[in-house]
Image (cartoon, rainbow, N blue to C red; front, side, top):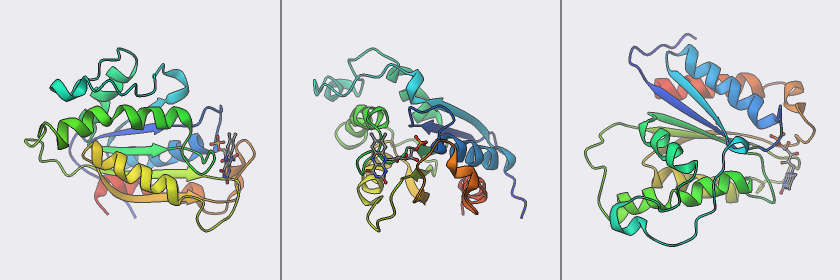
Length: 198
Ligand SMILES: Cc1cc2nc3c(=O)[nH]c(=O)nc-3n(C[C@H](O)[C@H](O)[C@H](O)COP(=O)(O)O)c2cc1C
């Protein structure tokens, strides 16, 4: 089915794997391709290329919603707030997202403070959505439970509704996802549907 939107919608993809040609990046690229084909302007950020400190719990953000740590997160805050929709992608590392991805999430405490403590951002009436993409080597039923919860609360902090996910078990080797019978198509559709509001 062909989907298309008319507006200049922006979709931001965050790639949380440190590996080159990672399974996560292959899926994210497909999802962004789907979003792009549906008419969105897409951008991908690789966490391994960014210098992002963990949250230091200084709580300077309680004053005005701004984080005191001046690193690459400052640009990412801007991108996260500008994006209409977000695709967050990370492999499973010890039943959670990678530490690089988690540093971004934790630093969004500043955006949580803006929304829940300072009451900022109420004028933004966009229906922003987010989806989560993940892969893991094992096959347990609870493999993604912890990470899904983390990403749901992350999306809430940045004012994005968790609207879907693609969680693929049994994927371990570099680029192994290419051999999966359905995952690439599913990722493409996830990106399309994110833009079209399915
Ligand atoms: C530090 C580390 C921790 C991992 N922890 C888990 C885990 O808890 N559960 C799991 O199923 N796979 C785990 N894996 C395997 C990766 O999730 C798997 O290899 C995945 O395909 C990597 O995705 P990528 O190619 O996108 O980086 C771990 C791998 C590493 C390097």
